[in-house]
Image 1 (cartoon, helix red, strand yellow):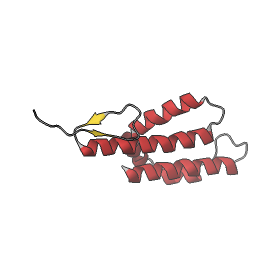
Image 2 (spheres, helix red, strand yellow; image 1 turned 30 degrees about the vertical axis):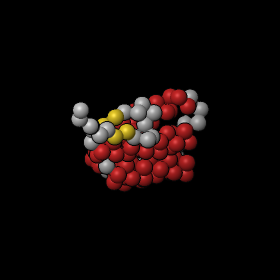
Image 3 (cartoon, rainbow, N blue to C red; image 1 turned 180 degrees about the horizontal axis):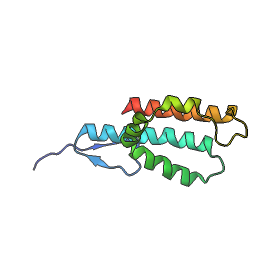
Image 4 (spheres, one colour; image 1 turned 180 degrees about the vertical axis):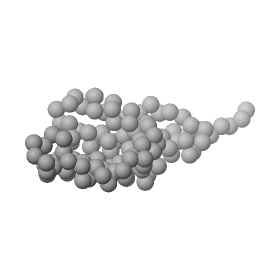
Length: 114
């Protein structure tokens, strides 16, 4: 009888098994990104149902490589200086600018992590 090593992510609620440690590590990273996104989304959208935010966060976390590629293609620095479309005047509101800065920082961090 042959012995086969399988790897499982401790963070994974599905307890998915992988034949390669690199695949299990990648799953851990996806889940770490999802956890960070979940916390970020809960702060940004406090009135939205927690289950919906969690589902969105984990869907985005599973696609972190694609999101990082998208963020890399975008001029994220331009987001910091973009006017807030919800502001009545031409100057961005401090709340809008802070939100854009958080999004930009998170996208840059995600791009570095993949």
